[in-house]
Image 1 (cartoon, rainbow, N blue to C red):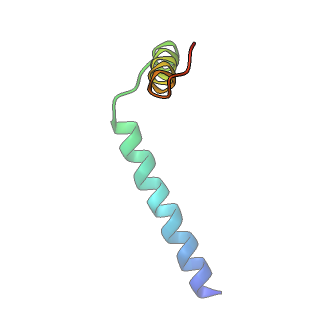
Image 2: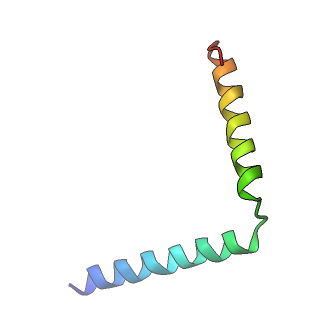
Image 3: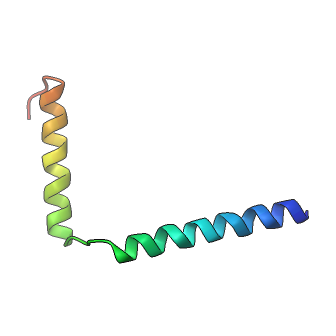
Length: 52
């Protein structure tokens, strides 16, 4: 039981570090994020020879 509690605590701490790093990073607007995602999808489709 103690090992499970310690593992959960470590997991929560790691998630906290990840979230803190994300908060400190560059954020893009929802519109820009969507544009970037659509651009990436278009590039991937082109890599596989798919249209659209």
